[in-house]
Amino acid sequence: MLRRITLLAAGAALLAVVLFAIPLGIFAARGYLNDERLELQRAAASAAALVRGELTAAAARSLPRPGEASITLYDAAGKRLAGPGPAVADPTVQAALRGQESTSTTDAAITVAAPVSDGDRVTGAVVLAASLGPVHHRAIMAWLALAAMGLLAVALAGLVARVIARRLAAPLDRLTDVARQVGEGDLTARAAPSDVPEIDVLAATLNASTGQLEARIARERRFSAEVSHQLRTPLTGLRLELEGAYGADGAQRREAVERALETLDRLDATITEVITLARDLPAVRVVAVDDLVSGVERRWHGVLAAASRPLRLVVEAGAPATLPISPPAVTQIVDVLIANANVHGRGAVTVVVRRTGNAVAVDVQDEGPPLGIEPPELFRRRPGSDGHGIGLPFARRLAEAEGARLVLSRADPPTFSLVLASEATTRATRLTPAGGRREPESDLNAGPHQR
Image (cartoon, rainbow, N blue to C red):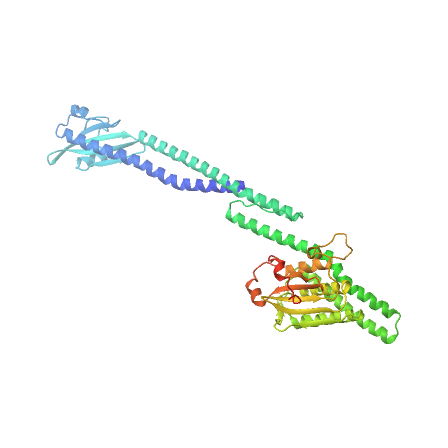
């Protein structure tokens, strides 16, 4: 690239110099010739005025000579009286003897003839001849000067082009290195600004793409580590159903198989939802409250009933008909909260959909003892755990990715709240990147059970 830009700039400068210098050199040579002709014409007219009627050799010798020009004097018959010119008048001299000033130019010399008059009668002619050697010398020097200036212009253009090319090539080389690092798996590589607006736009695009790729891969890795936790509950239920069917009679076995098939359907739906969330696939970011409630009823009524624990579903007056969150995300979040209540809580599990100020909350509450863990620890994954302690951090990250929040709104009885912006607020903040807007948790920790 550096060599191509330099050669291109030097070639363009050379073309411009050639197109400019050749006409200029021609005009300069013609100008020198015209200057010589005008000087000889003025000298010839002056000589003719000085001689007038005294057409003698002595008069010719007394005439002033401009530069290296020679003077020849002819009488009215065209006979040479003095000077180095032709013995017999040539056409230039004959034109002067007819009363007309004439000029002739050859490759080696320029000749000017002026008539000498005595009153109204032409009595002879004065001829001045000068070599064109000095004119050619001046023209050659002009051509050499133009060539030197042209070469200097081409050299400067090449030098400037090389400097500019290096300035452009350096950030492009850095971009290439960053792209190579990203291709080799280093997603932390970023391109630095270069003060070249066009290249900075490319660098910003590359950095943004790399950041999105890094976030997507990190999201998939995190979700892959947590997917086993989300699949463990339906798999455990399926195992229990199959174990119960093993020793049952025909009717009980058929009922157990039907429950197992329902569990398989739930497992299949969970896998689809987790894959959708892990890959951050485009999804409809709205779910009907009726669909949410009926889904919770369908998935958890039997599970909780088997443990003699009631499931209560409440949609308070004033609650919206839809929630601004994707169906897979809200399903996984609510399932994590109910599963947590099922494993660690006691008594009835209550799911409440309510409006609170400019937000909408989905509360999941059980009747267990107060939590002995501080809220920050609840949502922090504990390393070394065999699947336990993963659900709540997973649910919070899902909520933040959807622009929502998951908080412990009450410790006694344990109540978790998924807080979402209302529809009006959602429309106003739809351009905010997912997960990029976090408010202080203290603003939304007041649940419906606090007065």
